[in-house]
Length: 433
Image 1 (cartoon, one colour):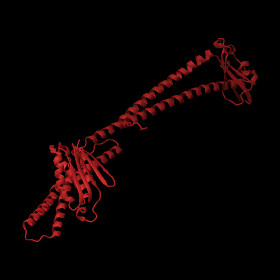
Image 2: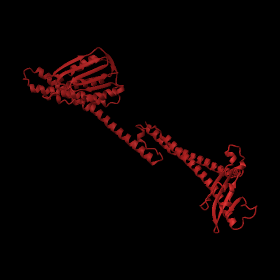
Image 3: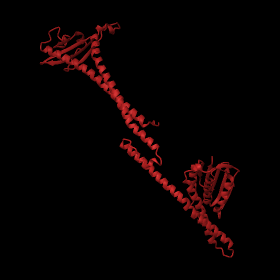
Image 4: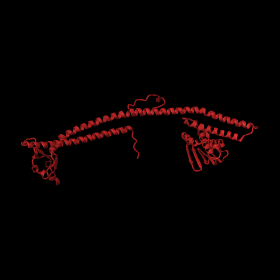
């Protein structure tokens, strides 16, 4: 199961809200526990004081504050309804214990008066070397009044403190959220607005050192990419002239030598010389196409290339005829099957793509069959993969980049390119739409 893709803002809000809720609930729980513990401590203190008063002989007047306490030196002197239910007296000193007594009539399903229900608080203590058992009976009406007077006031204070804590933590969460997320938002907006001009400007202050370091990394990375692109564009501009010019000179001189050879009938023709000239001619033509492909591949305005209506079948037949020299001296059967079709596309790019495919098929097929099929906007080139082992005239052309360049060009043009290789065949498809 994929984890939810939460934003940093949502994570911070959830984290702060969870921490605030845990703090408030924890504080409320601890406060309520201390409230109950405090009430038990108060009752225990009163029971012990009653035993102290008894040990000092102060437990005599009916109007004494301890008149409602039962203090006896033996357990059987305690109220009978308590001793009958608890046969064994408490064994631990100054440990408060409770006993709730329901009237027997209530246990039989009859309605019982509230005065028939009792609650005893009792403990055992030692004062002046004597052991005393102290109990205090509380009836429901007294309990209600006691709880109402003590607990209500404590709960009001607890509620006020809890609400104040929630408000204070909420304000703190809001302030931290604003303090932390605003610089991150500003960093994102700044990164999205980076361009050639803003890269030259100083990095804004995003308050936190980590964000400033991250902004510096982003800017330096983009500056490095920009510099690399500038170097590449500079190279392409220079290569466009510096590479094409010597290639054109080589091809023009090759054509000139061929023309002079044809006119000079009396000069004896040297077969090795002619073979060398042909090799130079093929290599220069391959260099020309490869250079044009690489230079065109580095362009950024592929979508702005001029679109023209191209007779696709005639273009393929022309390319096959132009590159037929690569099949000279080979036992290769060439089959070109086309149908009349006009497509609107950049002609220069189409010549590069299909020229690469056909040249690659001719160059790497020594014996077998090369098929060039065109149906509508689908072009298929199939060739065997039996390379030459005895003639270096074609193997030294080194056009292994053909298919890789074709795939890249088709990707940039939005054409579908597919290639499949088997033990004896290489199958390439190009669909223009």
